[in-house]
Length: 305
Length: 241
Image (cartoon, rainbow over all chains, first blue to last red; front, side):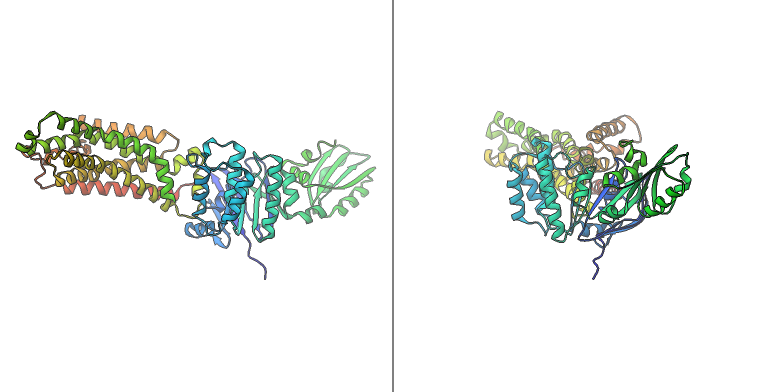
């Protein structure tokens, strides 16, 4: 039996006046997988997450989270009982102590695991009687993560979870994310740290200016994306290489660089037809794909030229 | 747990207001010491007058406290960055607002009761006359007539963003309405002081409330409070955070 998607949206949109934050987003986040959610600042990642959790109302479209309609407040509330969420700014009540914060969170969730909470408190070396306002930024991030990781939710949503953490904690968190996915938790996390996403994610979604520009499994992305660098004896126009599977083209007189998500062979064939004097095909990493998707191909290959 | 959080969030405000609310009772205790015991037994109504005298200054203090305790809520949380944490808990927004209102209203009622509990204890200790009915009426008039200030603060906090903007606006509103009621004809109905103090219903000879009491005024004020609180819940439910 195929598990229902943890998150599914259909034409989900959010407009602030005439400005669009998210446009016609059709997103599917599968259960039992780690899905990386990438995008530049202001791309609409946090807005999407807030719509999923019922914090803001979509202007158009709808969606489900753990099978419950996101725009229905009661169903969304029911879904939130099975979702652990760490927000980008790691919000915590400043006037509570660490112990009070942990007790507060534990009271709301049936999936709270006291043993895990105790273990994480020791590992993170959080001072129980210190008020949140007296904690360092790193400590606050650890506490916010603890509130999510001490549970066994069906869906774990992390918005920039590694911000403010030291490398040891980042490593610990990455291992925890993988372990949680292995236990059956769907993980949906946004990050600017592409290397982290590339390391743990099964699926990658890239959002740019509110639109979903990529939704692929990381394996298929690695297999299918290629960069083809070509040099020609005469100037060649971009139009000639606008073939199926070509995502971005950057042309500079006789030089051309093409990023393909499929059909690299077609591009090579076309290059040969134009008597390319140099032809180089290379696999690309997630970083290159991300930069190409959100900022045009020049950013992805700018360093090399 | 939401109740506990609301209490922790407001407890310092409450304790400060409680301290100030008890000041008239301290004066009452001081007054008792001035006159000999014979004075009280020969004229108990003087004692009732003195007790009623503690009620009048507490109106202004209680009004300030009701506004102070009504401020806050999810918009202020958004300003300080914690609304995301609250709203992603598996509870409805109505529950969040309702809990805050419940704790705040309980605190305001406790503030109205506290001076009379202290006055009653002092009277018991000093063996001076004390009317429970008079105390009950004073509390009822204060809360029934004045809870509208608390409800208004909750509503303003649900509409106006910013950490201190709602507080500034609310206090400006209280003074503005007070000024209009006192100085502009046609606005006198907005003056809640006669209702909350009960001075119009007091027998000047006995310093007790003989009745009838202003049930209509209390009902109108309570209805306005309920409408404002309902509006606050509705606005919060529809708002983006």
